[in-house]
Length: 79
Image (cartoon, rainbow, N blue to C red; front, side, top):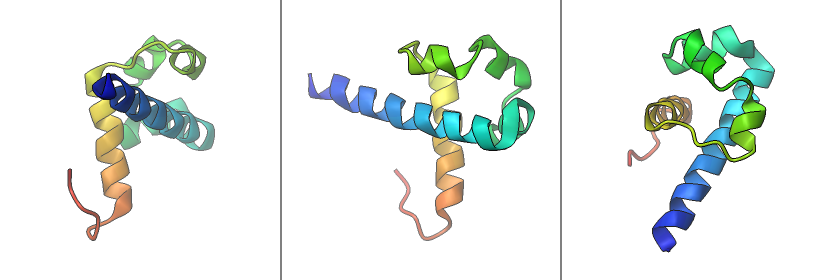
């Protein structure tokens, strides 16, 4: 059960990051920042679906984690 909670926490944290990126940069720039095509973001049909519990793909989660790690800078520990 602990693994489910950790996965849920991870998805929730990354969904929040996605919401922030979209609010600040818009869909096109967010796609660029994450190294994804804009169509990938369009498939979500709005962050509301992700926030409502629709699961983000593992590829999407990894892209968000990679972005997060880059923002942390060179002094951050890698996972």
